[in-house]
Length: 187
Ligand SMILES: CC(C)(COP(=O)(O)OP(=O)(O)OC[C@H]1O[C@@H](n2cnc3c(N)ncnc32)[C@H](O)[C@@H]1OP(=O)(O)O)[C@@H](O)C(=O)NCCC(=O)NCCS
Image 1 (tube, rainbow, N blue to C red):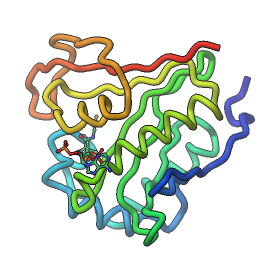
Image 2 (image 1 turned 180 degrees about the vertical axis):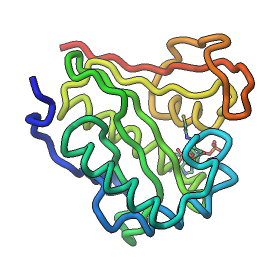
Image 3 (image 1 turned 120 degrees about the horizontal axis):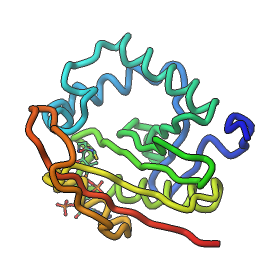
């Protein structure tokens, strides 16, 4: 089956947040948030090592909008419902629609951290994937030492499934362990 033919909403809300597919024009707000959050993002996110220009961010957003339409990568931009402010992104990546299974990723702009927004977004995305996309497996992978990311997974109700020792090299070239948190759903 061609995933591009799978129909589902391109946005949903939680108590405090609105999450929607990327749209042309989002690049400027994304770029401001990345620049503000560079110190927190760059240890973990390869794309944040070199600061992108506003044009780079807009090109990235348009690529993600196209991938959302094709169902090959599903980024959700996160906005505060109260003010409309862009505060970060999450998404369903590296999917296998045959299962279906997805990997969840996320980042938050630094000025909005520490308020439970990402845990709320991940819980909302988990519900969306399970009820709208029929997900049978959702996993969240991160560096063993990424304590903030591990807390988001745990706070969102994901059990630790495995620690993969000497799994990969980090962005500084050191061999590091990875964690896999996973939720599974059976019909
Ligand atoms: C990972 C990341 C998104 C976590 O952000 P965060 O703000 O800690 O996560 P949350 O939005 O879920 O907020 C949780 C914090 O808010 C606090 N909080 C305040 N009000 C809250 C509420 N109503 N509900 C839940 N938590 C609340 C919690 O106590 C928690 O603080 P603590 O970590 O000191 O215990 C952020 O650190 C980040 O973007 N890091 C860089 C990118 C990255 O590593 N991404 C993951 C790659 S795998």
